[in-house]
Image (cartoon, rainbow, N blue to C red; front, top):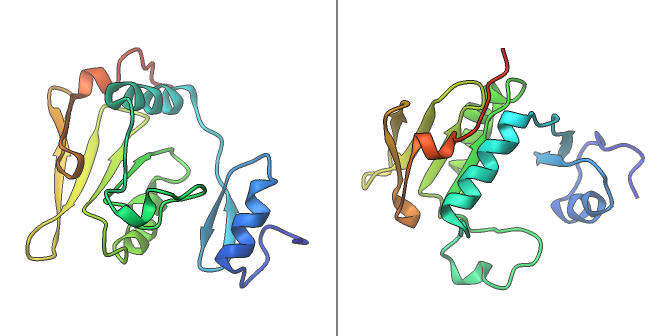
Length: 161
């Protein structure tokens, strides 16, 4: 179907069809796809800890997503575990793209190199506010009414030096 994953002007539908057959994970941005960087052990441990703490993270409360098989179109929450290669993009341009999603209420960035979580929450005036969390804090994700200590989130995570 595609000669190259970096082909310009790729439609979302073509991307979804192409991506299903790929061994690597890709990210779709403005008609282009980019290979996602390899995850580190701390990155994976943090993702597993979050999933275990919440059991079933439902990132959409929208009825239109209940029967979705491939992806959620109306998320209320997006959580990213940062990697060194994507940290700038995830907290910059990607966040700006996500801000265009009218159902999004929170964007959470979890650092995989040190204990640090940033929660961006849309306030009642439509302004994104930053709620930073440090080691001794408890994280609160308002959109799904979820609380978790950072020590649980980073449990058994050994940071790379």
